[in-house]
Length: 592
Image (cartoon, rainbow, N blue to C red; front, side, top):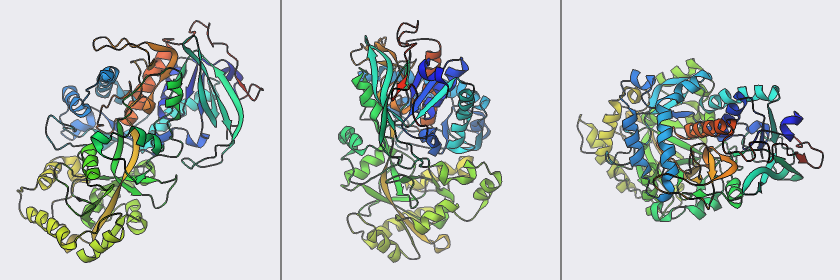
């Protein structure tokens, strides 16, 4: 342990996820001493980013241009504005953050990450396609750049220099340190208090104990909160769930994040005077399936689908346009919940699942995560579905595989949490759609969307199968997948200015200048800030923007603290020499 960084750090970071690592990286590049506290053990370093697919939102990139995708900052601004739908006085700083982030995504972002050693795959994904009009939500062009190495690689390029700084004595970690209070003095935040938790040998993501061992207290000129969202705190999600916009909170919700993603620091920050905004802007997914091999309680995985699966409600009625796979998450969420049930169905066949199904999560994509080019190429060329998908077909509780429509519907009804699906009604809807694949034209909007997708080389190669009859036995067997709602991201949170300074609840905001009063010494970054400002996405995310938001907000906060801006006692008068103590012996306890 480096005692100096424990007793007199230049900054304390609360949360060892991606945003915290980025902030720490920027601080140590400036020679600052940093103490990073996290309630989990070292195995969880990198937080949620580790589990991610590693998607990054970029604008007018070389990867896009090689695929003849014509993008621009102007087009991205238009897409972001129509998707975000900013409509509140509280959106002042989120608007500022969204503009700054778009400039980052069109400029410094790619080179910044490339200089750290991060590389991208050549195919750019087309997420959140919208499909409801040019003046509404959606990406006009593909912008989802997949990291070669997925989430673990995004974490690695920051973790390694941070660990090097730890070895050099600039960084100290306090794992199993749960922060319970931000210490304030004269309106400024000058440190943290909390409890050391008992050592935990658990693997990454596995639920750990909450046994308390001793107290701790540390002081510093700046505290940066990077504690993440609320995705496993269903009580908090339900409290702020936007019933008026999306419908009633579901009875069944799968957990897309581990148990420690609890949102505790939001209330703790609010108790210290912080402004919290846009808490009703929650980003949950509609294509969740139960993980047959779970890591955390209620573990769900998201299907990232291509455009061809037919989507039915719990009663077996096909959803209307634009509720197609991968088009408009919130609109489809509202449509599902309006039925009175909290689940839906994909109906497809073997040809579709082989080419169009991907699963979110680094662990579900071992070829890309392990950077094995041979296996990745085999995946593209193979006539079989990837091994993780085959495992879900075999073991997953939500999957029905059948040779006949009678077997298919019987399996769906066995898994129903509500009504019985009528076989003849379901089949007739599939037949009506299948008739639209006999020619190059179609009045079916989803078939038109498939043709549009295949006009993009990236989708034609890896994501969109050639239109065909779902009931054609040559493309069988038939498959149905029960889809539950899946928790994931928080789009609101701590309000911050562009330096990551947290705005006080009594601060003044106006539409022209944004002169909210920051709390001296308190900064925040990452999902706890809605990825920037208190919600830079507005109501809808364009995907590939969550990791980027953590990186950008962590970068801004780290650089601001390193420059001495907004710190409590930046001149050394408040907290700069405050003694750390844990259990009365000046150490931080176990690092298990």
